[in-house]
Image (cartoon, rainbow, N blue to C red):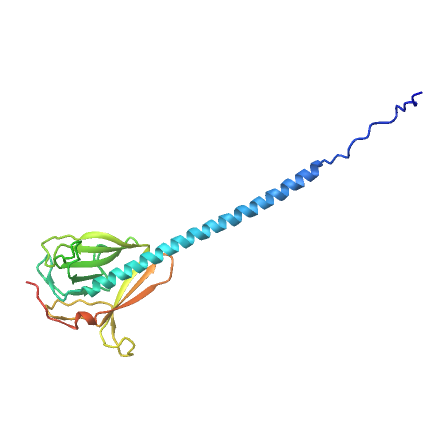
Length: 228
């Protein structure tokens, strides 16, 4: 005989696990918080890397600019010139303040730039000025200028809000009696060059940068050549 069937008995099922709605919402909230934290962290890393790249690029450009200035001053040619008005200008001319934005702060004669063949070009008159937060290099064709001669203009260093020179007349830089001047402008054909020049540039975002360039190698008394 078959045993009696108990209709109240139900088949045994394996224990089942399930998330409640509250648990799902808590998990989603935690995930959202972690996602926000991760985004801010990554964004901060990328911003820091971008700022470092910008700062590194600015430092490189500034170093190249100072190297260019040093190269130009080492090639300074002790020769006065005649400007477009026929007046004599000294080999080196530095202005504490310019009359217009197009005027150069410093102008001087230098030996010609080396060509690709290794030969030097003819001597030139060059200058630097600050215009629209950019230090510009001015290059005239030759030394003695034709009437209304205009220079070729090249951007040399961007992002600069101040560009100024000081001139040292005494021999020793650390001498308390050393005289620093803000300009160097003489119309004489024979001119005494300063001992050194101090250049100060101030980036738009950053402290001033100062470099001192010695002119001893150029020769203290300029008498070689004249504007003819």
